Length: 212
Image (tube, rainbow, N blue to C red; front, side, top):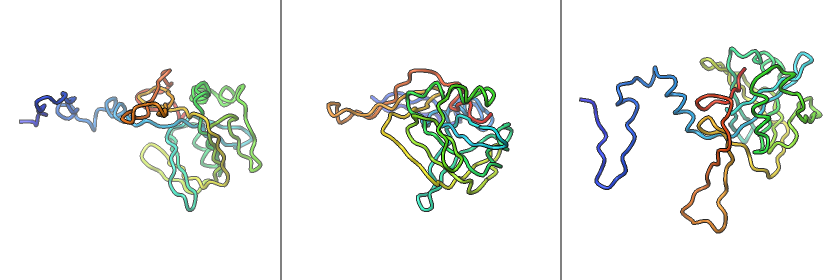
């Protein structure tokens, strides 16, 4: 007989785990994506210049790896038409989007490169990188290592320059964009920072359209 969760007296009922519903999680991709969407992330736009053209895409797989040396990572789908640009250029810039840049997150998620960069305020870096003006933070990187992992390629970058300013960052959670709400001095000490969700994102089940 399969295990069945038993609610304790006075305790709130717990949701039934997927595995006890008679479904196989390993073969249930929609449910797997929904589970992944429970992990809130920031939102970035990754850019590079290759073969005489600017390339950019929305990405929420960015993460820090090491402080010494300064290494960061992000991933791109191996079937993406942008893969060659980002793996062959040898460098890329990561712009961490501010909450006010939600429209740019959507703009860089789909369309041609000309459409993605149309009207965007771009700052050219001395080393050849390009970042979005007004972003919360940015990191110029040299490609340090390329790792093939399943249907994605992981790009490790060594940070050569960076900058930031104190602006609310754009967040992504449960397939929606949002803003992190900081606890105010007058709030109850039992309150935790929250996530305000003003609009749905372009992706489905936890992933902005970040690897096309």
